[in-house]
Length: 329
Image (cartoon, rainbow, N blue to C red):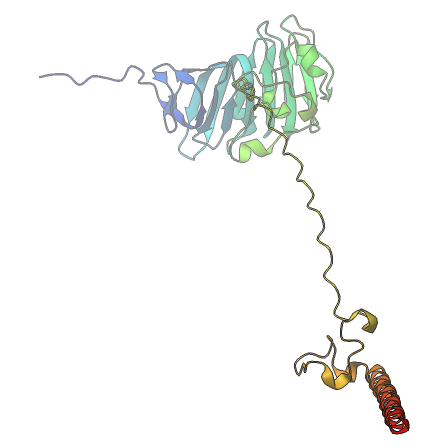
Protein backbone atom coordinates (compact mmCIF):
# COMPACT_ATOMS: atom_id res chain seq x y z
CA UNK A 1 0.00 0.00 0.00
CA UNK A 2 1.41 3.31 -1.05
CA UNK A 3 1.42 5.95 1.63
CA UNK A 4 0.00 9.34 0.66
CA UNK A 5 2.53 12.11 0.47
CA UNK A 6 2.24 14.60 3.29
CA UNK A 7 2.57 18.35 2.67
CA UNK A 8 5.98 19.76 3.43
CA UNK A 9 4.47 22.15 5.99
CA UNK A 10 1.74 20.55 8.10
CA UNK A 11 1.47 23.09 10.97
CA UNK A 12 -1.87 24.55 12.02
CA UNK A 13 -3.29 27.11 9.52
CA UNK A 14 -3.92 30.47 11.18
CA UNK A 15 -4.97 32.66 8.25
CA UNK A 16 -4.68 33.18 4.53
CA UNK A 17 -3.28 35.55 1.95
CA UNK A 18 -5.80 38.03 0.50
CA UNK A 19 -3.49 40.22 -1.60
CA UNK A 20 -0.17 39.24 -3.17
CA UNK A 21 1.90 41.54 -5.36
CA UNK A 22 5.16 40.73 -7.10
CA UNK A 23 6.73 37.95 -4.99
CA UNK A 24 5.92 36.65 -1.52
CA UNK A 25 7.23 33.32 -0.24
CA UNK A 26 6.55 31.04 2.70
CA UNK A 27 8.02 27.83 4.05
CA UNK A 28 6.53 25.82 1.18
CA UNK A 29 7.37 28.24 -1.62
CA UNK A 30 5.57 31.11 -3.31
CA UNK A 31 2.42 32.35 -1.61
CA UNK A 32 -0.59 33.14 -3.76
CA UNK A 33 -4.00 34.61 -3.00
CA UNK A 34 -6.07 32.28 -0.80
CA UNK A 35 -2.96 30.36 0.21
CA UNK A 36 -3.09 29.40 3.90
CA UNK A 37 -0.40 30.58 6.30
CA UNK A 38 0.59 28.52 9.32
CA UNK A 39 1.95 28.84 12.81
CA UNK A 40 5.77 29.13 12.91
CA UNK A 41 5.85 29.94 9.19
CA UNK A 42 8.28 32.59 7.99
CA UNK A 43 6.91 35.00 5.37
CA UNK A 44 9.30 36.97 3.19
CA UNK A 45 8.74 39.54 0.46
CA UNK A 46 10.95 40.55 -2.44
CA UNK A 47 12.38 44.09 -2.73
CA UNK A 48 9.15 45.05 -4.51
CA UNK A 49 6.80 42.49 -2.92
CA UNK A 50 3.65 43.02 -0.89
CA UNK A 51 1.45 40.57 1.01
CA UNK A 52 -1.78 41.19 2.89
CA UNK A 53 -2.99 38.52 5.30
CA UNK A 54 -6.20 37.94 7.24
CA UNK A 55 -6.16 35.89 10.45
CA UNK A 56 -9.04 33.82 11.76
CA UNK A 57 -10.08 36.42 14.36
CA UNK A 58 -10.14 39.24 11.79
CA UNK A 59 -6.68 40.61 12.51
CA UNK A 60 -5.03 42.09 9.42
CA UNK A 61 -1.31 42.19 8.69
CA UNK A 62 0.32 43.89 5.71
CA UNK A 63 3.92 42.94 4.92
CA UNK A 64 5.72 45.49 2.76
CA UNK A 65 8.71 45.16 0.49
CA UNK A 66 11.95 43.57 1.64
CA UNK A 67 10.43 42.18 4.83
CA UNK A 68 10.68 39.05 6.94
CA UNK A 69 8.26 37.98 9.70
CA UNK A 70 7.43 34.78 11.58
CA UNK A 71 4.04 33.85 13.03
CA UNK A 72 5.55 32.84 16.35
CA UNK A 73 2.61 31.82 18.51
CA UNK A 74 -1.02 31.30 17.73
CA UNK A 75 -3.55 29.86 20.16
CA UNK A 76 -7.11 29.85 18.89
CA UNK A 77 -10.25 29.08 20.92
CA UNK A 78 -13.76 28.18 19.77
CA UNK A 79 -15.24 31.69 20.07
CA UNK A 80 -13.69 33.12 16.89
CA UNK A 81 -10.93 34.78 18.89
CA UNK A 82 -7.39 33.94 19.87
CA UNK A 83 -5.88 33.49 23.28
CA UNK A 84 -2.43 34.33 22.02
CA UNK A 85 -1.09 35.75 18.74
CA UNK A 86 2.58 36.67 18.62
CA UNK A 87 4.58 37.64 15.57
CA UNK A 88 8.31 38.21 15.39
CA UNK A 89 9.38 40.92 12.90
CA UNK A 90 12.98 40.51 11.79
CA UNK A 91 13.15 43.37 9.28
CA UNK A 92 11.03 45.43 6.94
CA UNK A 93 7.86 47.48 7.10
CA UNK A 94 4.42 46.41 8.33
CA UNK A 95 0.87 47.53 9.11
CA UNK A 96 -1.16 45.93 11.87
CA UNK A 97 -4.91 46.18 12.49
CA UNK A 98 -6.25 44.27 15.52
CA UNK A 99 -9.12 41.79 15.21
CA UNK A 100 -11.87 40.78 17.62
CA UNK A 101 -9.64 39.24 20.28
CA UNK A 102 -8.70 40.88 23.56
CA UNK A 103 -5.89 43.41 23.29
CA UNK A 104 -3.79 41.42 25.75
CA UNK A 105 -3.72 38.52 23.30
CA UNK A 106 -1.56 40.37 20.78
CA UNK A 107 2.18 40.88 20.97
CA UNK A 108 4.74 41.98 18.37
CA UNK A 109 8.43 41.32 18.95
CA UNK A 110 11.20 43.44 17.34
CA UNK A 111 15.00 43.56 17.83
CA UNK A 112 14.63 46.82 19.83
CA UNK A 113 11.66 45.87 22.04
CA UNK A 114 8.04 44.72 22.23
CA UNK A 115 4.92 46.45 20.94
CA UNK A 116 1.93 45.99 23.23
CA UNK A 117 -1.35 46.30 21.32
CA UNK A 118 -4.31 48.07 22.90
CA UNK A 119 -7.01 47.47 20.31
CA UNK A 120 -5.31 49.50 17.69
CA UNK A 121 -3.85 50.08 14.24
CA UNK A 122 -0.28 51.18 13.58
CA UNK A 123 2.65 50.98 11.15
CA UNK A 124 6.10 49.86 12.25
CA UNK A 125 9.48 49.54 10.63
CA UNK A 126 12.53 47.41 11.52
CA UNK A 127 15.84 48.44 9.99
CA UNK A 128 18.80 46.20 9.13
CA UNK A 129 20.52 47.19 12.39
CA UNK A 130 17.39 46.51 14.47
CA UNK A 131 16.32 50.15 14.81
CA UNK A 132 12.54 50.16 15.23
CA UNK A 133 9.98 52.89 14.60
CA UNK A 134 6.27 52.72 15.39
CA UNK A 135 3.59 55.21 14.24
CA UNK A 136 0.13 55.05 15.83
CA UNK A 137 -2.88 55.29 13.49
CA UNK A 138 -5.76 54.41 15.77
CA UNK A 139 -6.38 53.41 19.39
CA UNK A 140 -3.33 53.16 21.66
CA UNK A 141 -0.08 51.23 21.88
CA UNK A 142 2.87 50.78 24.20
CA UNK A 143 6.48 50.18 23.27
CA UNK A 144 8.90 48.71 25.82
CA UNK A 145 12.63 48.11 25.39
CA UNK A 146 15.83 47.94 27.46
CA UNK A 147 15.58 51.69 28.09
CA UNK A 148 11.98 51.71 29.35
CA UNK A 149 8.49 52.08 27.89
CA UNK A 150 6.74 54.73 25.84
CA UNK A 151 3.00 55.24 25.50
CA UNK A 152 1.49 56.19 22.14
CA UNK A 153 -1.96 57.70 22.67
CA UNK A 154 -2.49 60.29 19.93
CA UNK A 155 -2.91 59.60 16.26
CA UNK A 156 0.41 59.96 14.40
CA UNK A 157 2.43 59.60 17.62
CA UNK A 158 5.83 58.09 16.85
CA UNK A 159 8.62 56.41 18.83
CA UNK A 160 12.04 55.37 17.54
CA UNK A 161 14.05 52.82 19.54
CA UNK A 162 17.43 51.12 19.12
CA UNK A 163 18.51 47.67 20.34
CA UNK A 164 20.97 49.30 22.78
CA UNK A 165 18.09 50.87 24.72
CA UNK A 166 18.12 54.40 23.27
CA UNK A 167 14.55 55.52 22.73
CA UNK A 168 12.93 58.78 21.64
CA UNK A 169 10.02 60.42 23.40
CA UNK A 170 6.62 59.98 21.79
CA UNK A 171 5.94 62.82 19.38
CA UNK A 172 4.15 63.55 16.14
CA UNK A 173 5.75 61.95 13.12
CA UNK A 174 7.05 64.11 10.29
CA UNK A 175 9.01 63.48 7.08
CA UNK A 176 12.33 63.91 8.87
CA UNK A 177 11.89 60.44 10.38
CA UNK A 178 13.06 58.93 7.10
CA UNK A 179 16.41 60.67 7.58
CA UNK A 180 16.54 59.47 11.17
CA UNK A 181 15.98 55.90 10.00
CA UNK A 182 18.46 56.34 7.16
CA UNK A 183 16.07 54.79 4.65
CA UNK A 184 13.79 56.78 2.32
CA UNK A 185 11.84 53.58 1.65
CA UNK A 186 10.84 53.12 5.29
CA UNK A 187 7.15 53.43 6.22
CA UNK A 188 5.97 53.22 2.57
CA UNK A 189 2.30 52.84 3.50
CA UNK A 190 2.34 56.27 5.11
CA UNK A 191 4.35 57.97 2.39
CA UNK A 192 2.21 56.42 -0.33
CA UNK A 193 5.16 54.63 -1.84
CA UNK A 194 3.24 51.35 -1.56
CA UNK A 195 -0.51 51.09 -1.91
CA UNK A 196 -2.64 48.80 0.19
CA UNK A 197 -5.97 47.33 -0.87
CA UNK A 198 -9.24 47.27 1.05
CA UNK A 199 -10.07 48.95 4.34
CA UNK A 200 -6.54 48.53 5.67
CA UNK A 201 -5.39 50.98 3.02
CA UNK A 202 -7.73 53.73 4.23
CA UNK A 203 -5.65 54.31 7.33
CA UNK A 204 -2.54 56.42 7.41
CA UNK A 205 -1.51 59.79 6.13
CA UNK A 206 0.01 61.87 8.95
CA UNK A 207 1.29 64.34 6.32
CA UNK A 208 3.91 61.87 5.20
CA UNK A 209 2.94 61.91 1.53
CA UNK A 210 5.30 64.84 0.86
CA UNK A 211 8.16 62.63 2.02
CA UNK A 212 7.52 59.93 -0.56
CA UNK A 213 10.74 59.16 -2.41
CA UNK A 214 10.83 57.94 -5.95
CA UNK A 215 9.57 54.39 -6.05
CA UNK A 216 12.42 52.12 -7.01
CA UNK A 217 10.15 49.14 -7.58
CA UNK A 218 8.67 50.80 -10.60
CA UNK A 219 10.19 50.00 -13.92
CA UNK A 220 11.90 52.99 -15.45
CA UNK A 221 10.08 54.41 -18.44
CA UNK A 222 11.41 53.26 -21.81
CA UNK A 223 13.91 55.63 -23.36
CA UNK A 224 12.37 58.15 -25.60
CA UNK A 225 12.78 57.38 -29.25
CA UNK A 226 14.58 60.18 -31.00
CA UNK A 227 12.55 61.50 -33.90
CA UNK A 228 13.88 60.57 -37.31
CA UNK A 229 15.11 63.72 -39.03
CA UNK A 230 12.96 64.60 -41.95
CA UNK A 231 14.53 64.64 -45.34
CA UNK A 232 14.64 68.06 -46.78
CA UNK A 233 12.64 68.29 -49.92
CA UNK A 234 14.43 69.77 -52.95
CA UNK A 235 13.80 73.45 -53.30
CA UNK A 236 10.71 74.05 -55.30
CA UNK A 237 10.88 76.20 -58.37
CA UNK A 238 9.23 79.45 -57.81
CA UNK A 239 6.26 79.96 -60.00
CA UNK A 240 6.95 82.49 -62.77
CA UNK A 241 4.88 85.59 -62.38
CA UNK A 242 2.03 85.68 -64.81
CA UNK A 243 2.42 88.19 -67.56
CA UNK A 244 -0.10 90.91 -67.40
CA UNK A 245 -2.36 90.93 -70.35
CA UNK A 246 -2.82 94.31 -72.02
CA UNK A 247 -6.10 95.78 -71.24
CA UNK A 248 -8.50 95.65 -74.13
CA UNK A 249 -9.79 99.03 -75.24
CA UNK A 250 -13.21 99.71 -74.04
CA UNK A 251 -15.89 99.18 -76.57
CA UNK A 252 -17.38 102.41 -77.83
CA UNK A 253 -20.43 103.35 -75.92
CA UNK A 254 -23.67 103.34 -77.79
CA UNK A 255 -24.47 106.86 -76.72
CA UNK A 256 -22.08 108.68 -79.06
CA UNK A 257 -22.62 112.39 -79.61
CA UNK A 258 -24.87 113.15 -82.55
CA UNK A 259 -22.18 114.99 -84.48
CA UNK A 260 -20.06 111.80 -84.67
CA UNK A 261 -22.77 109.83 -86.44
CA UNK A 262 -22.53 109.72 -90.24
CA UNK A 263 -26.27 110.37 -90.71
CA UNK A 264 -26.37 113.44 -88.51
CA UNK A 265 -27.14 115.76 -91.48
CA UNK A 266 -29.56 113.36 -93.12
CA UNK A 267 -33.23 114.12 -92.67
CA UNK A 268 -34.89 112.11 -90.00
CA UNK A 269 -37.16 110.38 -92.49
CA UNK A 270 -34.17 109.31 -94.64
CA UNK A 271 -32.44 107.40 -91.82
CA UNK A 272 -32.81 103.65 -91.84
CA UNK A 273 -35.55 102.40 -89.61
CA UNK A 274 -34.40 100.71 -86.40
CA UNK A 275 -37.50 99.42 -84.78
CA UNK A 276 -35.54 97.33 -82.28
CA UNK A 277 -32.88 99.87 -81.43
CA UNK A 278 -33.14 103.50 -80.47
CA UNK A 279 -29.51 104.55 -80.21
CA UNK A 280 -29.01 102.27 -77.26
CA UNK A 281 -31.87 103.79 -75.21
CA UNK A 282 -35.63 103.73 -75.29
CA UNK A 283 -37.49 106.90 -76.17
CA UNK A 284 -38.86 107.14 -72.70
CA UNK A 285 -35.32 107.25 -71.29
CA UNK A 286 -34.75 110.77 -72.59
CA UNK A 287 -37.94 112.35 -74.11
CA UNK A 288 -36.63 115.93 -73.96
CA UNK A 289 -33.55 115.21 -76.11
CA UNK A 290 -35.66 113.30 -78.63
CA UNK A 291 -38.13 116.20 -79.04
CA UNK A 292 -35.32 118.70 -79.38
CA UNK A 293 -33.68 116.53 -82.05
CA UNK A 294 -37.01 116.19 -83.91
CA UNK A 295 -37.46 119.96 -83.92
CA UNK A 296 -33.94 120.43 -85.26
CA UNK A 297 -34.72 118.03 -88.12
CA UNK A 298 -37.86 120.02 -89.00
CA UNK A 299 -35.96 123.30 -89.01
CA UNK A 300 -33.32 121.75 -91.21
CA UNK A 301 -35.92 120.50 -93.70
CA UNK A 302 -37.60 123.92 -93.85
CA UNK A 303 -34.23 125.51 -94.41
CA UNK A 304 -33.51 123.13 -97.28
CA UNK A 305 -36.91 123.82 -98.78
CA UNK A 306 -36.15 127.56 -98.59
CA UNK A 307 -32.95 127.01 -100.52
CA UNK A 308 -34.82 124.92 -103.09
CA UNK A 309 -37.33 127.77 -103.55
CA UNK A 310 -34.53 130.24 -104.07
CA UNK A 311 -32.96 128.00 -106.69
CA UNK A 312 -36.33 127.70 -108.53
CA UNK A 313 -36.73 131.44 -108.41
CA UNK A 314 -33.26 131.96 -109.89
CA UNK A 315 -34.02 129.49 -112.68
CA UNK A 316 -37.22 131.38 -113.54
CA UNK A 317 -35.36 134.64 -113.63
CA UNK A 318 -32.72 133.20 -115.88
CA UNK A 319 -35.36 131.74 -118.15
CA UNK A 320 -37.09 135.11 -118.40
CA UNK A 321 -33.81 136.75 -119.35
CA UNK A 322 -33.31 134.28 -122.06
CA UNK A 323 -36.62 134.81 -123.50
CA UNK A 324 -36.18 138.62 -123.39
CA UNK A 325 -32.83 138.25 -125.08
CA UNK A 326 -34.32 136.21 -127.83
CA UNK A 327 -37.21 138.59 -128.15
CA UNK A 328 -34.96 141.58 -128.44
CA UNK A 329 -33.02 139.82 -131.10
